[in-house]
Image 1 (tube, rainbow over the protein chains, first blue to last red):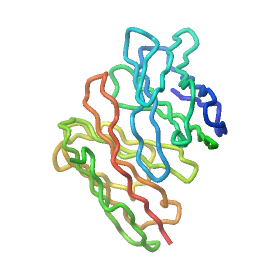
Image 2 (image 1 turned 90 degrees about the horizontal axis):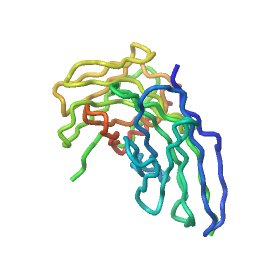
Image 3 (image 1 turned 120 degrees about the horizontal axis):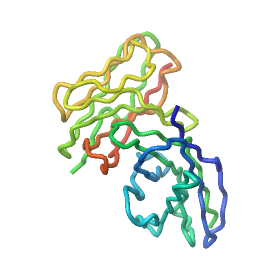
Length: 113
Length: 113
């Protein structure tokens, strides 16, 4: 069965620290990849997406992610986090030609001011 | 203008009752979904409709019945509510094309007492 793994369940950082959240998936075919953010009490919002082309994609709010096909990974990065980045982050995979999105279990990020 | 809107935002009810959650999207998407987010923030797909046709039906108790009167609406009716049904239910939509992300509604927090 396809799965999406987010290894970091809870990350605590100070402001200005660099962030990297891991995401691995288990599907060997063509995939679309996404990172979503859920601020406290809110719905999920799209941060960035990868479909094809340049494996380094840039999203909103200074986030970026790198698709490494050989590692089945799509890690999320930000050079310098802010207190307002405190949220839950979800990686998602959509199998090519399927209308189904698989989500990771989420990573809770706490940024200390 | 809200792209994916669901009502109500909060729903508190007693065990054994029947309740409905409504969802509407004005994005012109052809696929709609219901996701359940439990207390640990894990997102699980429940149902998906494409142009009013059920295409995904995960292992969900048959007390849950989705209905899609048209491709812009997907409602969720729950019979005989149980304590374990307490969660946040998110409606989402996407276009059938593979480069389309999910757009989420604001969620309905269901509390069963």
